[in-house]
Amino acid sequence: MSHRVFEITTHGPGLYEFTADLARWIAGEGPIEAALTVMVQHTSASLVIQENADPEVQTDLAAFFHRLVPPTTDPSMAYLTHTYEGPDDMPAHIKSALLPTTLTIPVLNGRMTLGTWQGVYLFEHRSRPHTRRVMALLR
Image (tube, rainbow, N blue to C red):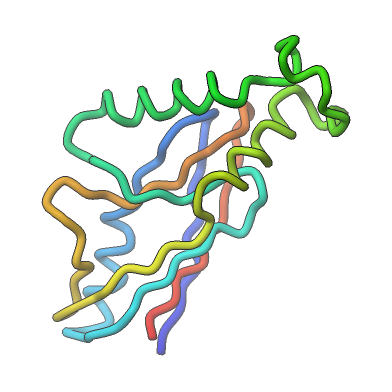
């Protein structure tokens, strides 16, 4: 069993791929067979496995979730009461509740068994820059 914390710097809403970082760490553990579990240690960001071939996919996903859960400055969100941390804070918590914050990926021969066009992403939901912590565990 091995673990590592990854720090991912974000610069606003969007998807930040860290597949290569995970792959390098796993490769250093040898030709293992294990389950990789990753968990974001924040309540306003998520984790997703998504296409990494066309960047329009990430752009469209971010736009969709912004439209689905707009900032509290949008009249449709006037019912929210948790607003003192900024207009994007409570919507970020809602997005985090809708999307996974933990992923499990099989590892065979020291490699994640992702599909050809799949990548692992931190999905940042806040507007200002953050350093997000993702805990990774191989078991």
